[in-house]
Image 1: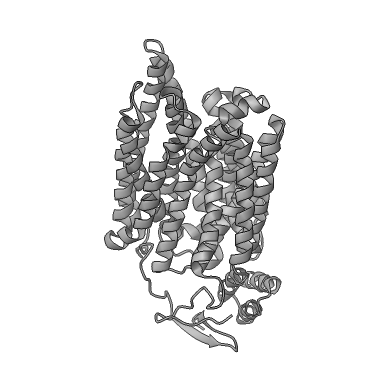
Image 2 (image 1 turned 180 degrees about the horizontal axis):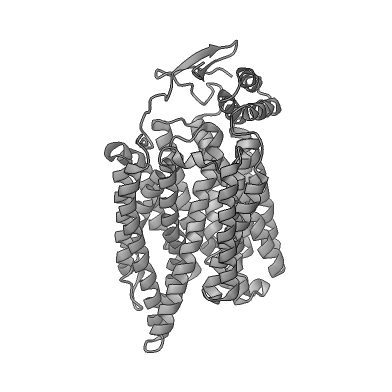
Length: 552
């Protein structure tokens, strides 16, 4: 593979003879779209799924919860596995698990098989999402190319959530609920083929080379030369050798992984159970206390281990800490929005599954448009101003949505707010993702991708549990003196009002935290950045690469 230097001295991440960057990005973005699609595609079909496999009320919620629990709890482990084992390899395994489990869910004849298949889907998603994001960061270094890549990432993420509602409604009404899983299985298989064909094996070599740059000269050279030969296994060996000598440690943090996975499992389980059992239920309280104790133990473990799953240094890099905190708050509203909005359409407005899904199209279109504009806006206004304005735009849309009525209509009550929400959500997501990977070393890119997905999922679980409890309480109180539809509407109005307040507070935090998180301001997603340190150019028979100087 021939690599050449750019005018700024960087080595392009793509080959002049390999797949075009746009095709590689399309394959990686399709993987992210599939993961987001599976999060929301079942929402519209839940009544039909319940009747089809004989689920109880509690069992019906676990069709959604099993996926979210496994996904959220295993994301850090998935991101670290991508860093240590090879991002392309982990992505392919994750997509294969995702496709097989989706097929099993579609043919499930019992509730137990269906819920187990959804949990395995979450496991596949936990491997797929961070590996795909890390590969995108590998292939598009800081600059306009990365800005455009993050714009695409934001577009497909938002479109996946809205598209899941639309596709779920179409498939359920046309052919029945099993087809929502059959289509996801087919789509996952196609994405798997695209990734295997288009994403170069040298993506794993790149991780090995950059990890080696922090280690001994001999090990760095071994990882580099193995990658140059195109030998994936040898490149991985070079990467592991580099890790042992000062890269990412080269070993998997089993105690930390087990502790944080159990902690997140207890946390997500407790929050999702609280939606039905209430916050004072002994199971809920016990689960949340267990999660708190395990998270405290995890913090102690990570401070003492040289090969920590989530190294403390990660939170001192750029605006990573601020990006993850703000993404958790955005997620608390994001996931709840796609849960409650279809319920209002079906339960109050009386929309069919197909009409409910079609109602998400304006939101999805606004989302894709906003994601395409996000890099340009960020270059013009800066990251802090961009994310603050985007969060306030979404907050205004939700406040507008809080004016819904029991005798309303889609055009009068939902269309305008949906467009504002889609624009704000997509731009905020793109910029917060840029913050969450700002300045992260190459060997930690998979972990950073897993972490930002984890904070969004856990934030979503917390937000959905809290807002569902609020909606239930307001609805029950209103039902004593109002009709059923009016009581339901009162609950949804309360949810959207609180969600708007959360986003307004998040915008204020963004204004403060993203300016103070680091003395070095993080670049906008599409901005050029100078090399952080001088570099020496190493020329070999096949290519020119740049090696950071180590001060020796």
